[in-house]
Amino acid sequence: MGWVNGAQLGFPTVIDEEERDLALVVPLAGRLEDTGDPWLPFRLVDSAGKPVEAVAAFFRDLQAAGRVEATLRSYGMDLLRWFRFLWAVDVPWERATRIEARDFCRWMLLGGKPSRPHWRNPGQAPDSGSTGQAYAPSVRAHSETVLRGFYDFCAMRRSVISPVQRGEMGGISLDPMAYPAPKGNTGTIAC
Image (spheres, rainbow, N blue to C red):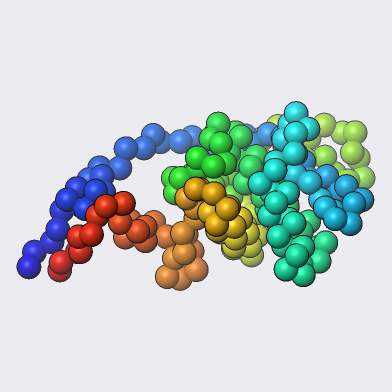
């Protein structure tokens, strides 16, 4: 048998995506608040101060699974970085795709950490833009793990598709076959 055309399986034959400028400055919008409440020790809020309810539900689930406050804070910082990126590219978190996940990974690698005031001089305005220093591999790997857990959690509770797929080597999978076949498609790929 020969190769089956991707269009026959419901996959697009040409990926329609815009080239995103990843040299963008991701504003330090929103924050992770320490609430002082043992039932919800941290809260991720947007730039208007409105809590991100899906993250609060995720934190409650993590806490129920026995995760300590330090873990919730660590996960919260990764989610804050992701949400800031999505806010900068104007994509709602529940509409993020593999393209945003890919661009987020590229931005963390090439865009560099944002400039921020030094903790000793909190009133000093930071330089605008990036430090030019990439996030460490451990930070990028942790972010991917946190995002995968967050979207897996959300997918169990509602119809959200995770933009972060498991890759064979632990990285984000850009393999189009990593996704299940579209609904109603029972065809197989013949090689």
